[in-house]
Every structure is written in structure tokens, then in C-alpha cells.
Image (cartoon, rainbow, N blue to C red; front, side):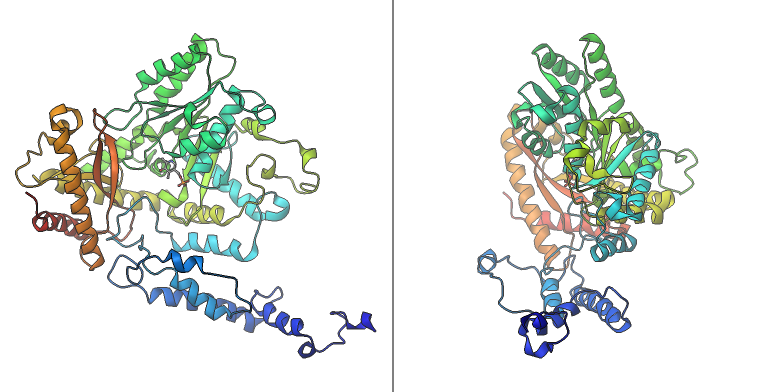
Length: 561
Ligand SMILES: *Cc1c(COP(=O)(O)O)cnc(C)c1O
């Protein structure tokens, strides 16, 4: 008798068994495995409804809904509910979490290096959310594993690596790409670190302007944050290669082994571009001079700058796309450095920054696929995986399960934009950033700080009436007597920033960001800067003029002695 009461035997009506009644509802919250036209439509409409609700939160403001206070107190009171809710209820509550979020694609949101995702990249991220390919192996990813290799080949050839020799895979962010690069280098410098541990002789060399994730990487790899050696930068935010050579030589003479030299192309806040060719030459000289038994690994952190490689074979002389001369100069100025990316032993690329894809979409590329062996674990340690199929990234990736959203988002954009689309989009953003610089350089009250870098990001300072902006920048940086002024004007710029923020929340002006320390002065004081990061395809000259007007308005509105 009991046997007959088990589910699946078909003898119990669902209404007699409470859990079976719930199960019927539960089955409705999943997309149907076998096409059911009515339910398929219900699934699609549920997504459309959520999108509609979010669209209704758009206004003239560069944010969704209204600004609001974040309530973490209430969050701590959250508990798992006893009973089930409907798709509609949950969708509405999911939508509500987006209140107050900046709309990164809004031309009056110029906050940070956060990309507005394109529609194909959104579809690329959505489909795997439904069908869940796992890139640990092509056993579980099928054609998506091939798409990943296509993206690898496209980017490898774009940056000047041989796609037949290169290897690559997507990982958890730009930080993940730096981690992978340094890990490969660490294994070269400290053989068998994977089995034996790191010891205390390895150092990581990076520029002072490199991303702070160098600390996560050094800490989490067991190198230790204190083993990160920083090389000073010049005023273009580039690593001083002469200093690199002496610092690296010193380290080697002190018995250290170089886990990696981290070149940055370009820096997050200014698009400073290290001279990779010179850095690689230094590395080669070190190997010879000290007769090193390993080749220090050079990883290029190009998560922001890689996108400019679409201009590597653009004809700047005839300029067929018709950019303004100032833009041509800016693009060519970046390419001068970016065109050398193929010299790096490995690089990192973020599609969620300058590739217009949703988070997280980061590609790690090795120039020489043989280098994967440094990360390979023995096949026999993972007996239950990899029995079939031919491509098993899980043998060398840090991740086990690896989602495909980032991969297909990147793949979609590479194929959809093509070089033409990326050139026009990036070129336009640079054109707008250059227009902003023209205004800021032209006005007596403002100075551009990263005037030797040529990206879509502009760091600038605003000064009160009567300040000689011809000389103030140099004085703040180098003059001992100007350090009190520097601090005072830091405060002034903070106040300008807050004014601009208030205006943006009233639907006027532009949502910018502020960096508390763009660089340090020669005396160690932080230099505060306002930052305009232009990534919206919708920006036009009118928005730039509006921004400049609001800055001048802020200057009049602020009460300053
Ligand atoms: C953003 C950034 C990183 C970190 O990348 P995530 O994708 O945020 O992990 C590393 N390096 C540079 C230069 C960056 O701009």
C-alpha cells in the first residue's frame, strides 16, 4: 500500500498531498523543457513586464527613479519567507532594487569606467542565464566553448598576437586577468610554487599608477602585499622605465625573483600608457645581464586600453571616418603604445569597460599557449570530469564552473560592432572628451590634469576667482610653498563636486565623479580631481557645453573667501 502512495505512481491526486500541490506551482516558475507555446509566451512576457517597469523609472534624470537613502538596517531584518511568492511579485521587487541607480548610457552620466551594454551583448548575457552552459569543459558548454575560442582568436589578432599560438579564457573581472598573469609569472620565477608554495623571494613590480588590484593579487597569491614594488611614474602617468631597470636590478641583486612585471595600458583614472616595448627590452636585458634561469613574465593590464587596438590599422593620414584633427591626434597618441600589446606575455581585456558589455566580461590572453602548462593540474586529480569532449579549460582555470554570460556578451559585440562600429563609437567618445578639454583648457578657471593622456576620461580642477591657472598646476605639484593652497583648493573642488551632484539630481547638469587622489604632489599630499568619464554613445556637443556651463555656475554659486 505504502508503495503505491509514492509520487510518480499516479495514484495520488495532487490536491490530497500538500507538497504536490506546491510542486505544480513550482513547475510553473521554470521555463518549460518541452515547448509549450502558452507557457513560453508567459515566460517572455514576465521578462518584458519587468523591463517595462524599469523603463517606467526613466525620466530626464541620469538615474532610474529617484535618489534614495540606502537602508541597510531594514536589510538586516530580512528572513527567508515561509511560503512561496509569485513570479510577478518577485519581478516587481527585483525592479525596485534599481531605484536610484545611475543610467550609465545617459549622456549626462559621466561617472566612471562603467559601460552601457549594447542589446546584442544583453542577449548574449541573457541566453546562458536560461540554458546554463558551463565553460569548465565543452562537455557542458558545447558550441559556447567554440564561441569563447572565437572571441580569443579575434582579440588575439586584434592586439597583434598570433591567434594560432595564443590561448585565452574569460575570467572573473580585470582583477582575475591580473591574477592569472601574475600566477603564470610566479610559476616561472618560483618553479612548482603550485605544489610547494611561494616562499618569500618573489616580488611583483608595477607602476605607482597601476590598479590597486595588484594588492589583492599579491595578497591572495601568497606573495604578500609587501612584496609589491612600485615604480614611479612621469607626468603622463607612465611607468618610468629607467627606474624600472634600476629597481628590478636591485631586487635581483638582493636575491629576489621577479614574479611579474605589470605594465598598465592604460590606467583607470587617466589612461596613462606604459611603454611596453621599452619594458620588454628592460626584461630582456635583465635576463642577459644577470644570466637569469627564468624569463620574468610581462603582463599588460590592458583592461581599459585594449579597445583602441581597433585603430591599429586605421589610416590616420587620410582619416576616412572624418574625425577632427584633435581627435585623430588623440587616437594616434594611444595607438602608439597600444599597437605594442602583442609583445606582452599575457594581457587582460575588460569588455565590461570599453567593450560595452554587461558585467562580468573579462578575457585573459596568453601570447604562448604553452604557458598554460604552468597552471595545469593533473588530469587524474579530477576523475569525474573530462571523460568526453576535447576542450577542457577547467584543467587550468582558477574557476571550476564558469558561466558563459560574459563570453557571449563579448562575442556578440565583437561580431556586431566590427572594427567600423568600434572605431566610430570610440572615436566619437574621444571627440567629445577632446571637446570638453578644449573648453576646460580655454577657460581661466579650470585646468586639465591628464592633458598628456588621450582617452575618454578627463580629470580637471576648478579654481576660485583670481587664481593664476597658468602656473597653479605646476605649483601645486612641485612647489613646497603652495601646499597649503593645494589643500584649500582640494576642498574647493570637493564643494564644486557636491554642487554639481545636487544639480544633476535636480535634472540639470552632469553626474560626474571625484577622485580624492588623482596623484600625490612631490610632498605627498593628495591632489583631488573632478572626473568626467565619457562612455555614453548618446553624448553630443550640447551635453559638453551644458557641463561647462554648470561648472561655471557652480563657481558662481559657491561662497568662497
Ligand atoms: C578596472 C581595472 C582593473 C580591475 O578590473 P575589474 O574588472 O574591476 O576587476 C584592473 N586594472 C585596471 C587598469 C582597471 O581599470
